[in-house]
Image (cartoon, rainbow, N blue to C red; front, side, top):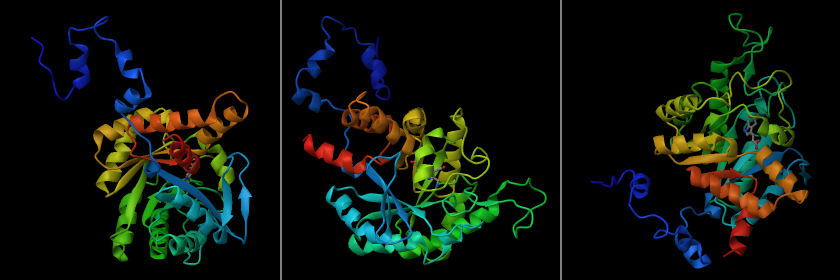
Length: 355
Ligand code: PBG
């Protein structure tokens, strides 16, 4: 006798005796009304987190060539953009800073007058309810473009036991903690460490709590892969590594079990939310993390994913709007609660006009 297992509804369904011609799944696709009724996944502007690139200077709004419709903006150009984002019901922005000067330890990142603290204050002035997430990494701030302090002969942090060029983990944690406190002090609601530095979530939690920011949340890039799809971003954020690559700290695209290990560590260290990045080539990871952990989960549709869709759309090879929305719903279907996406304003408008 067949007994339905409520935990495995799909399996029990496939074992019922009925089949074609009694069962005709097309009945549920006959009209747009019925399709809407049985739709399993939905997409809304509330799902989106919009990345913004903030640069030094005044009255600057510089287009990013490989990312159509995306700009580097100076702080004074943020308020208008924030009002536009708010009007589209997008709840959150993710900030990347391009400082005026870079140095070996990325000091603009932990200066109270740095690019991000200024941007956060400007945003909170016009939209206190906008969730401001600060991407916490050093690659945009260091002269060498790596995500922390690099072991260099003659440098104050030089450690002769470690190879030259090695990203120094523990000194980097200390600077990440300092920068997080500065960004939280400026009003950032969420700190999102993105460097794949061991122990980063625990170090940030301790630093934030130690300075009275126990209410500031941590959204960890728990599983971030060393991906070619970050190409356009590195131009946008002016952050390509000047030597080597990021394979010493970002994950190997071949590994899935390792992603669960990384997530487990970040959960244990106190992460409030998780990010998997990139999105589309890593939907199996999104799905596995979703099934294993109850934390809110974001997937990051990165610059290369955005650029590819735009390039194919511009050539007339695909319908940009349709394929962008299809990618976004696919990311949600895989299990993401939130999507970091450069499509956020366009998608919000498209969703609104299709209602
Ligand atoms: C690092 C960071 C990167 C991205 C977001 N944060 C680049 C990198 O790791 O090289 C990429 C985002 C994108 O490609 O859209 N601070």
